Amino acid sequence: MVPLVERHMARLPLAVVAVAACLSLLCGAEGRGAEDTVLFDFGKEGAAADWAPTKLPDVQADQPAPKVEISEGGGQAAKCLKLTFDGGDWPAIGATKIPVAGNWKTFQTLKADLTVDRPSVAYFRANQGQPDAKGKQPRWERTMNLLPGRNEVTLTIRHGIGAMDPKNGDITSFIIGMFRPEKDQALLVGNVRLSPDWPPPQVVGWYSPYNHDGYSAAVAREYQRTQTLTKFKVLGTDLEVADLAELSGKLKAAWAKPEPKTIEQVEADFKAEFEKLKNAHPKAVMAILREGEKGYDPAAPDKAYAGWKFVYISCHGPDGPNSGREKMPNKYETVEVFMRHRSILTQADLSPIPKGATILAARLVVTRALAGDLKIPEKPNLWVAEPCNRDWDDKTANCYSYAKGKLWKGVSGLYFGEDPDYWPVFLTHGPAGGGAVCVWDFTAALKFWGDGTHANHGFFLHGDSSDYMLACTPLAKDIRRRPAILVIYEPKE
Image (cartoon, rainbow, N blue to C red; front, side):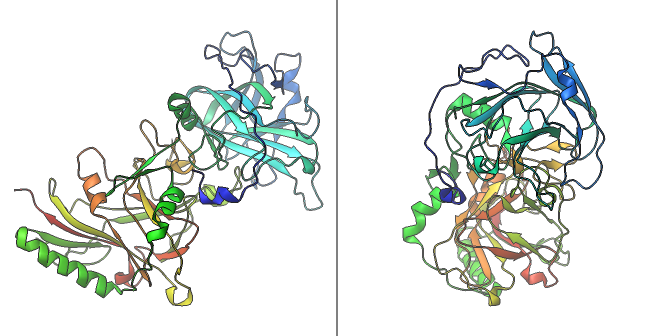
């Protein structure tokens, strides 16, 4: 099922055609579909001269010029364009000679073979028409999270946010570059062609190989292997869904607005549950893991908890150079918590819970800022938490990297196959609170991390488009408004 944001997109008639690929070639032109049209022939004499370093108008600083040459493609007959970089943020080369003239109206996808020797983020841009008086120019663009070796890339140019509109005019230039390449890092580009076909799956949501927020070679290979899209297990239920939108649809009829509660009421309710559980579990312990709050450790009641960290991550378009995606914003007392493309990755240190302890109950508590000035949702809404599988750095993580020099396999970690960025699991689900305080059952989440097979790397909290939250962070001046995990556990004998 396509995420809710996709439901509003126009859909065009589709021609479903299977596309053959020749896996034995590094950058060869063999294996293209019968109707594909070669865009750039790197085997023609003087092909490298058509390309020159270019400065992207939306990148302020000058970029080191990549070295451009023609490569034999690792001994194969077909030749490739080889770019060798000298660092930079968005170094790129461009060509104004476009062999396939016009606005490319008859084509659905752009295909290419991209070869790298390490995980990388490459970049394509096609400019249309001419810049206006302010220098703005219509364009289609796509970043690509690549795996080491040859990546057979298929990019949709007709569907999704940022699709190429033929009304914007003919293609006037084509850009190839990388995001923050290392010094002497190389990119080989070959077999670049345009196709009237759009191979399945014909969706462009966040979990699709055609994600309009950024292509992922890992996601594409996983789909080729399984012929299925990601399915999420909903912990605490027997449900398995394609995405939050499908889960929301299944639960909508039973939705009821939660009763507004204060922090004090939430904690009183949890303490009452603790007293009941002690009847069957007399050794049970209750702890509140809230940044700066004392009392979480029975052995050191005056010790303040210090274990929360967070980072705001956005893959919101436009794709390509976009400071909102690349730069981690400053950390404040509040942070935007919204949909899967714009929300918060957060983690609480769970080491105070003894290893092997039995989790009897747990709650995740998040306080909404400015709740008195907002109309708290009067209609069905749903929030979920996805468990992260990367040891991320809260000082450098963004939509491309989870730590310095370490790339997600998919933009914003949207890869759920073998060795996933995030586990295909919803740790918790439920509506936001009826007032400022939101409470979700987190029992299954703590059991997930305590099973010995899933390291605690925190979770990505996000909701559907029915609700928007400005949430208090672990930096909030009022300690009681900071996020918290309430837990009741029984130590191992």
